[in-house]
Amino acid sequence: MTGEPFGLYIHIPFCSRKCAYCDFYSVTADDTLMDIYLSALSEQLEQWSQRLNGRKACSLYLGGGTPILFGAERLCKLLKVCAKHFGLEQAEITLEANPNHTDYDTLLTLRGAGYNRISFGVQSAADEELRQLTRAHTAAQARDAILSAQRAGFENISADLMLAIPGQTQQSMQHSVRFLSQLNVTHISAYLLKIEEGTPFYERRDALKLPDEDDTAALYLGAVQVLKQAGYRQYEISNFAKEGYTCRHNLLYWDCREYLGLGPAAHSFIGSERFAYPRDLQAFLAGSKPEPMGGGGEFEEYAMLRLRLNEGLAFEQAHKRYAFDEQMLLKRAQPLRQYGLCVCDENGIRLTPNGFLVSNYCIGKILA
Ligand code: SF4
Image (cartoon, rainbow, N blue to C red; front, side):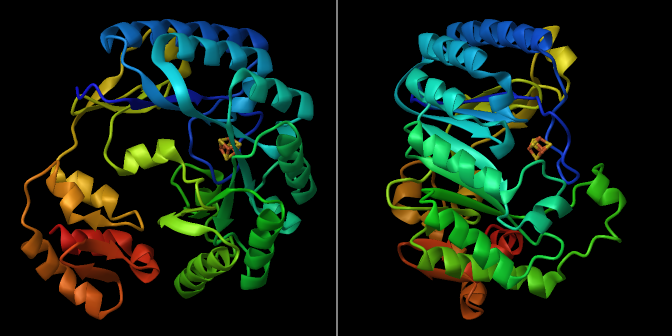
């Protein structure tokens, strides 16, 4: 264990219904179950604080599921327990929310309690695309939620956008980016839709009018361009931010730093070990331990994560943590550079937007 501050992640595994493309772990729940879950989390937080000898966290991220469904009162209590055990002074404290579950009073209470960043699952500003995704909100509800959050005092607002939605065009993608930029959101995560096995989308994948590979690539590269024009700097394959608004919590992951994840399906990386709680709420409530997932934090993993970032693998910075042969890496990166997939020199290697599109291939070649 390094003793440095680390990131704290808490999974809130509740959704009112399931979106057809989603494979995140979530269930429906009533107040009683949510109260029980809060107690179980509180116990785990206390136990982990003892195991980590009072180490402080520099960020807290509540993901899901739909964390805002947990309700203002429970969310405020949970934040207090986290702060009691892990400090969270000057911490970035993020809560994920869906536009249709977000009202002004709740947001005001949460902001007052110390939540200082909110991430909305907007996905698209075109109602037909939201319908295709089986999302439960409209574009108008997304606008209202973002405006309410701003009125409640949130200035650090992120929104998820989905790319390669069935029927999506360059025009509709541009419309979605403009929609968010006109609302002054400070951070946008633009993810390609992935058809995950076990989801309803997977079952009817042949009937979905998904963009083909070329159209998907054009949508991604088009989004990178439009976001840039709108003042969002790309800092990771799928993440774009206004100056000063990169996500500190997620940057810990991509810098191969430590994080503790609590809740069913939550992953951790602490003291060179990876472990995860089973995707099973009842098992978590019954006190099941996280399962070991092997070691981590070696140079290959660090390099792989850094190459997801716009900054890329900076040699000087990397040498402070690892011994490695940079000449060998540069030699392997040369052919990619010739195809415009990366930029490399004596300072390091970084992928271009074209390289990000085929990042697995590029990273595999560089770290072969
Ligand atoms: S609201 Fe989010 S976590 Fe819940 S099913 Fe939909 S995409 Fe998944």
